[in-house]
Image 1: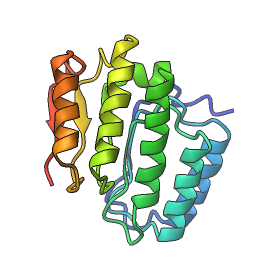
Image 2 (image 1 turned 90 degrees about the horizontal axis):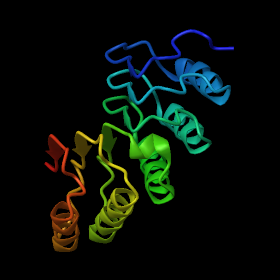
Image 3 (image 1 turned 30 degrees about the horizontal axis):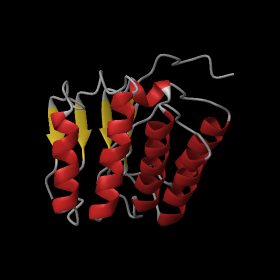
Image 4 (image 1 turned 60 degrees about the horizontal axis):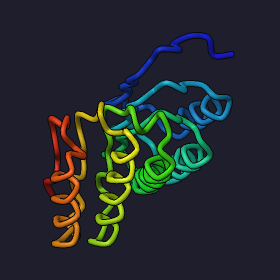
Length: 178
């Protein structure tokens, strides 16, 4: 099953105003069968996905759908993308702690729009330090942390420690704006 697009890394389905919850249901069925397993980036912004569709997609991600996906942009839909972002961030944190090959070899990581506080930002830096100490993050080129306006001094201190250790040595784009 799903022999097509086995090498697909990036799937851009944005500005399709008719892609809504019916599309999400079909996508989730595909994901639950192991489809799109190599997709690293999925863009679904500016479509017609409701809160229910976002929750359905978030549940699929939490169950292991899109196992290599480190960036999933679903903003500017009628529904809030917060559940999707939370599910992806939680899985990415778990993969960093477990040092899975998918996360250790990722070129891009996104922890954006989560409204994380300082302690959560420190937790992320600790997970990144752990992954770096176990040989990971060598391929990481882009780290997205934007729209986390509650990150403060503790996060900055942890981030500086990570940078001092060379944990983000190959990162070309670090996005911290709010």
